[in-house]
Image 1 (cartoon, rainbow, N blue to C red):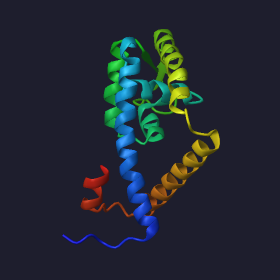
Image 2 (image 1 turned 120 degrees about the vertical axis):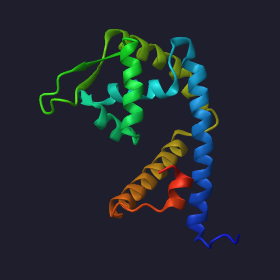
Image 3 (image 1 turned 180 degrees about the vertical axis):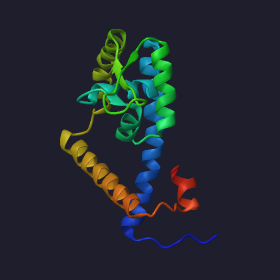
Length: 169
């Protein structure tokens, strides 16, 4: 099947996205290994981090939105974290059914322990790179996210099945 023609920018974005997929898989695997002694996975760590990063307790749907994840997946992980005593729930004064998710004392301790492991690990990942290069890569990723969000906002809800299957949308 002949490949569609892309602009040079489109070719560069395609190559970048494919490498980002590979990098994401590697980061998740490395993160799993790093924090396995704490009884965490990368997915659980990511959820704990989203709770910590929020300025105030948020419902699952908001945490999922901030992570760019599906609410059902985040809910499943939060339920598991609650069973382990790492998160708890508070009444949401704005919505009777959407409880607010909060870290427990044990959750804070586990998250802090994970971050103590993460600091030297991230320092080693930066070896051979300048902070300026990393900041440039970060700006490019943020711009791509903004472009993707703008495209999603412009869509009327009809998704192209070919794009959905390739990019997991």
